[in-house]
Image 1 (cartoon, rainbow, N blue to C red):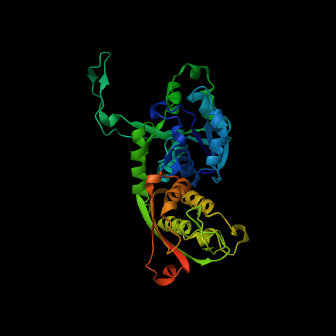
Image 2: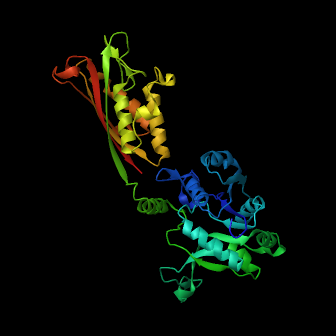
Image 3: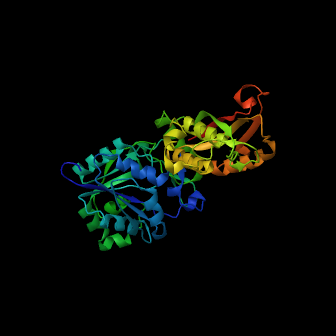
Amino acid sequence: MYNGKTITAVIPAAGSSRRMQSDVPKVFMELCGVPVLRRTALAFENCELIDNIIVVTRAEDIDFASDMLKGISKLKSVVAGGADRRESVLNGVNSAGSDIIAIHDGARPLVTNEEIVTVIKDAYVHGAATLSAVPKDTVKVADENSFVKSTPDRSMLRNIYTPQVFYRDEYLECANSPEAEKVNYTDDCQLYESLGKKVYLSEGKYTNIKITTPEDIGTAETIIRNREGNMLPFRIGHGYDVHKLVEGRKCIIGGVDIPHSLGLLGHSDADVLLHAISDAILGAAAMGDIGCLFPDNDPAFEGADSLKLLEEVVRVVNEAGYKVGNIDATVIAQKPKLKPYTAEMRENIAKACKVDISAVSVKATTEEKLGFTGKEEGIAAHAVALLFT
């Protein structure tokens, strides 16, 4: 809310994404581990002037988008789009029910809080406003034969971004007018302009790019990493675990049940290798260790399958914006011999970590009968994990 006026962000995200050359709609693609649409919605979630958010998607994507946007408290609804942009935006605006609407492309996830606040305040004063910026490059007007016809004064030109902010009642009056049906517009300002209304040009940032082509993904991720200086392009973690060898237990290592006279003692299945890998992954993300996620005094994890636990670890770090790059692990055991089983271990780990098997290394060594592993009292494992954002 601003000066007593309620404000709803309407986020159209029902486009076809043809230029992205992908079967996945661009708004569902990930930037540093977070979907584009979720990043866009979060920008408005975190803005103090925004009261509600309405997202407009293709009808078949409503459930998927709703699930993706869980946890966003200002989300009022996800509604179906229409045959074109005008109809899609109108569906969202009709659902808004606020004094002011801020229409913002779902594929512009890098808009800043400062930009949102600026354009809303300008629209409050001037009746309508859009974010914009002076073009960096010289712009030419071409004739029908692709020759230069003229060179406009760049200082008089603007790149137009979103949000584009209007008083809701006035927008609906324009959108529902007979003249609007004749306007083939690419942004909502054109609708206003065609009816003789003025739109103020608020100052925006060049980083407020629209994700349109595959090249935009890399550019956007670079901007995100520069902003989130604490999120380096990659993170490295180390994990270590040890379990005692006892009678009457299975010897499960790397998700493989290995024939042996002794097994590993623990609250779960005591998979020493997977526990070390889990700790390495969590350590790389600075998210503690597996004891934080799966306490050894919780009955729910008694006898738990450590492959399932590893899958949950990977899910947690994925949600935090990280992906597993590669794993290198070493199991230290006098017996049993593990080499015949390392290929299957690698397959299990790769599947749980959502990586190719070539990104997983599992080695085994003895300690020449020295120490507790050499005396066959237990088995230990070390692991190193690389995550990237």
